[in-house]
Structure formats: structure tokens, C-alpha cells
Amino acid sequence: MPRTLSTSLPERVGATVTVAGWVHRRRQLKSVTFLILRDAAGLAQVVVTAAEPRARLAELTEESVVEVTARVVANPAAPAGVELVDPTVRPLGDPAVPPPFDLYRPELTAALPTQLDHATAALRHPTRSAALRISAALVAGFRSTLDGLGFVEVQTPKIVASATESGAGVFAIDYFGRPGYLAQSPQFYKQMLVGVLERVYEVGPVFRAEPHDTTRHLAQYTSLDVEFGFVTDHRDVMRMLRGVLAGMLGQLPSRAAGALDTLGVALPVVPAEIPAVHFAEALTIAAAPADEPDLAPAHERALGEWARAEHGSDFLFVTGYPMAKRPFYTHPATEGPPSGGPREAYSNGFDLLFRGVELVTGGQRLHRYADYRAALAARGEPIGPYESYLEAFRHGMPPHGGFAIGLERLVARLVGVANVREVTAFPRDLHRLTP
Image (cartoon, rainbow, N blue to C red; front, top):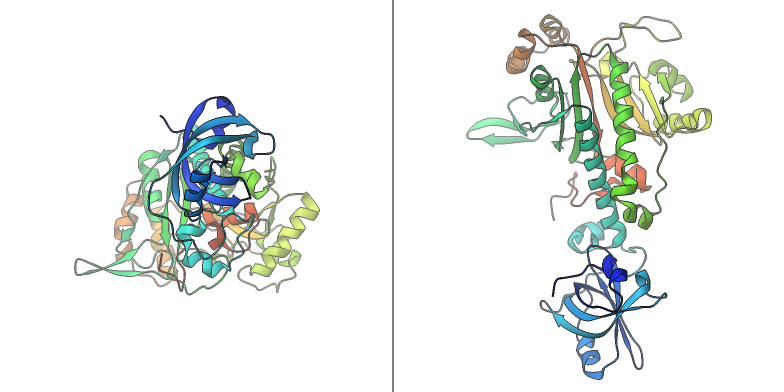
């Protein structure tokens, strides 16, 4: 008999069906045993009254995998309003070793390190798996939104020859006797491909060997990268980002409704025009020193509160980041701060804050070969390591720009958890290399 998922049971009242999944919980009363079975779609309640099947169920541990053939009857008090009666229960493997925490409870009570040590079991909890479903739905929405805008998905190398792409720490590897590195981002390659396809995006891992041990950093995370040509300046990139985010979030109700309900997620509204402040103005709002070269997490939180109070927005663009804190390929500012002052210190680069945390970095890039040579010389960087990258600009590149969204950070802020590890299946950080 074909397998029926738990969510389809209300359509099968009166029929005999076969379901299969994990023993989520057993409740053994005096004359009846309730078996709660969990599958990929949800929960199903199995009612066992016969003595022999009840005795066999007593030997099954939670998380054992079973198949149940039974009749579907209506019961408003049961999950989804139905339950399974007169069952035949068949184990599909050996009795499971119970994990070191109860998966049937509404919340996982184990400390996060314990959950991560036993991730293969902890991820089965509905709250943990719901975050993964939301993540998958966001990626699907990212792809479909950009596909609809004429972008082409690309895949770029994750083993690279240069360790100096952005100044961030890199993981060195032995590449057939030569030095190689895990890619910190697809930045160089997605820019090169603008010269081929004009509009490109990528979903892939990036690697940062930075010794961060915080709730918002991982040594490997998923980056949603976009790059496109024929922009006027960074504001075109900001408008594109706004549309992509709206598309991604707008598709969540249809792609991950159950997961949103499980976690009680209230989706943010993406304003028609996301409020923006210049970096110099942001320092004033955040009560940061006027010579601060970057925004600290406390500054970002203050700006998030300001955006919510002044604009009713969970999102805020901070534009005009100092050139000193941006990679060499960033286009210098074409306008000075609104308050006046020289523009030379600033860039056409921006960050997008979401609920007081940096979520996206982007901006306009340099597109002239001579400008790249001058930018590298100004930073005392040799041309050699960048020759294959710079070749694209010798052959003609349009004005272009792009951005990168950190997927895990987006999901964490969206579902309201404090640590990105809570929404990452198998996180890699300063201390964790397994499972």
C-alpha cells in the first residue's frame, strides 16, 4: 500500500492507509496506548487497544522507525482532527537509542552545545527542522525572484589561488603541492561573469578563518550573492536588493507556512523604499565617535531601534561606508555626506541592517582597469595575485554592482533566535568541526 503522509490523513477518513515515521512519543494508559508518529509532514496519533500490540509497543523506544497500517477515523482532539485505529505496527529497524533530550516536548531544553553535539537527533525537533525549512524556502524565493528578473545562476570555484581577496582570514590548503585557499566569497568570479551574462547570482558556501567566537559569526556560511551590470551607482543596487528581499519574504507563506506557524514567526514588511542614512549620520544617531571607522554591534542595535521608532521599519540602509573599511574593488563615493564634508573618504558601498544586525553588504564596484591598478597601488598591493581577475576589466566591463546576503543570519533574525548556530544544520566555527 502506498505510504500516506500525516497531513493527508484528513482526506482519507474511513480508509485504511499505511503511514511510516518515527515514534515521537508513547502514552501507555491502563487499557489503551497512544502512539504519536512523526513524519516529514507532521504528527499522527495511533490508538492501540489490543493487548498483544500494546505489549510489543512497550518494547519500542522513542525515535524507533515504524510502519503503521490502520483505519483513519475522525477525532477533533487528535492531531489534524483524525487518528488511526485497529493498527498493525511493523518496526523498520532496530529499537532506537533514545537521544539525551526529549524530542516530544514543545521546546528543546538541552543547552545549545549539547544540541550541536547530537545534531542528527536535535534537528528532528519541530522547532529546529522548521528553521531549516524556512531557510530552504528563502533560498527558493531568492532563486525564483532573480530568475524572474533575468538573472542567471552560476557556480564559481571554492578553491582559489589568492588569499588577499578582502583581507579576511583564509583557510590555506595544499593544492597538489601548491598553496591554495578556500574562497572567502565569489566576488571576483561573479564580477567577471557580469562581463559574460550581465546579471548573475550564486547560492554557495563561503569560508572565513577569522577567530570570531560570537553568536553571529561562522567559519562557513551560506552566501546569497548577486552581481549585475549597467548600474548608475549604488542606489540601483539598493533598489535591486529591496526587490529581492521582498520577493523572498513574500514567498514564505506559500513555501513554508507550517514552519512559520511552528515558530510563531511574524514576517516583516519590506518598505517600498527602505530608509537610508549616510555613515556619518549613522555615527551621530548611534552616539558613536565621529572618527569611528566602522559600526560596532551596539551601534547597529541603536540604529535598528532608531529605524523602528522613526520609520516603522525593520530594515535600514547605511550608505557611504569609509573607503578604509571597504575592499579595494569598491567604487569611491560620487557624493559627499548630507552634512557636508569631503567625499574622498567615503564609498558607494552600503550595509543593510535587519532588526539591528548587519545582514547584507553591497555597493557599486570599480569597472575600469586603470582604476583597479590605482586602487591596488594606493593600498600597497601587488598586481600579480590579481592578474586573472583584472584581465576581465582590460577587455571592457560595464558599470556594475552587487550584494551578498548571509543566509543563516537572515534566518536567525527572522525567527528571533540569538545565535546563528540554532538555525544552522551543522555549524562550523572556531571550536566545532563535527558532526
